[in-house]
Length: 114
Image 1 (cartoon, rainbow, N blue to C red):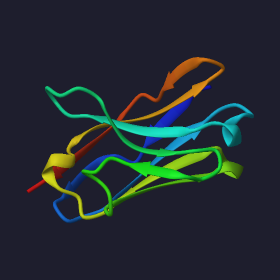
Image 2 (image 1 turned 45 degrees about the vertical axis):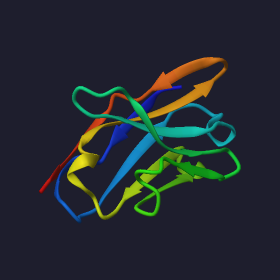
Image 3 (image 1 turned 90 degrees about the vertical axis):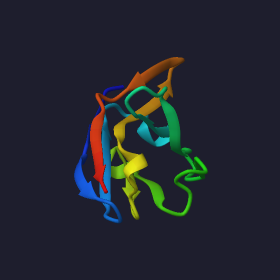
Image 4 (image 1 turned 135 degrees about the horizontal axis):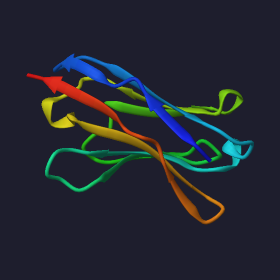
């Protein structure tokens, strides 16, 4: 499985961005997909998860502001980020586990200015 993340950029506080992660392979619809982020000096943290059945889970810090979704026909997972805060500044990574292996996208930088 190869993952290609995109959609990061510079946005003012209160603004919105939508991240996309395109996956290769034919098993996308069967796998759970995650978004992680890593801010400078911090460890990587789980932001949101969506299961193959569409169930979602969010970190408390983004609940109510971020929405994860998937489009199986396009092998793509999205992260809609609203009401962005400077503390959301980080490199965002998509992730999955398939056939007992971890797969990571290359990361996309989100910078939120105050």
